[in-house]
Image (cartoon, rainbow, N blue to C red; front, top):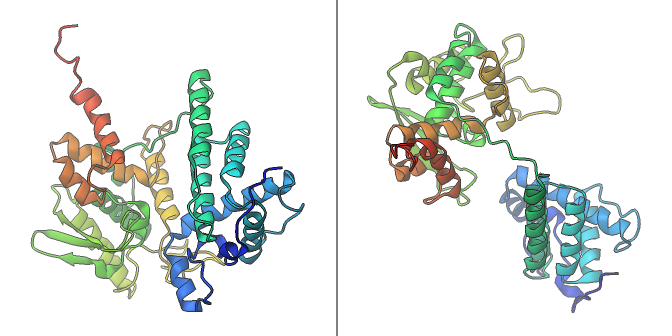
Length: 372
């Protein structure tokens, strides 16, 4: 039995459901305040963290660290289970270290284990138990990563294949730009590439976020994954040399199609059903205004890449547009700082630098010209 009694039950009396409200206090929060606290964390992150916490509770139950069959079917019951876990064991450092080792034994991906550590640490803080030490769990994870690398058992992460300019043209060429779906998907692909947008950013665009000027179109991205305070950024997209890959003209064509269906406001990219209806809401799925989801954006990219005959072994996804923007603009000599700010990467982003390294691996190879 792992034991580390908590010093005071009061500190864990208000474990919020699914780490959505990082507040432990004797005051009762209003429904509006709790809703804002809940929405401060992206919905996708909340879902992932909820799953991680449920799996932790299940493991604890199997190890007799919690009563057998603890109910976690909803947020309230999961919160109660987490509260009981904290009351029984207090600081969860030792427990988490054992849990990470168990995940490693089960062959879970290191990234999955990293997220579980983050979810449990967040719940620990939210429950009023203070900052959770994670040095032990991370040392276990480090050993696990080394073991996988040494034995070759680790599965290499498939990075999203970058959509190059040539690939973008090939994708645009297979779309039927006389059909509503073809007009939308062309605009989505070209605009996504030109913005270096995350799929969530592309899905989140409204018609009102576009401002056309003599030079091109300005796009306001109101919030994004790394913009926690939703300060937003404005991207300026000039006219392209080719109409099929011009962000201005392809978006104008889509806006004209939307206007023909009496849509001049609301989401920019919407669902289209098989009958040509815009924004129809499938049963219990999607938002009422018909906005495309980030997942739908990824499906458009993958589907069109397949239709264009692009390398089937490559991982084509929504992130392919963003990665392609980074590599293609850098390849033509754009300054990395300008690329970062245009695409919404933080200055010095390790992710962006990784994309740049992919280009420099050959373009600035130190062996080039040595006479081998």
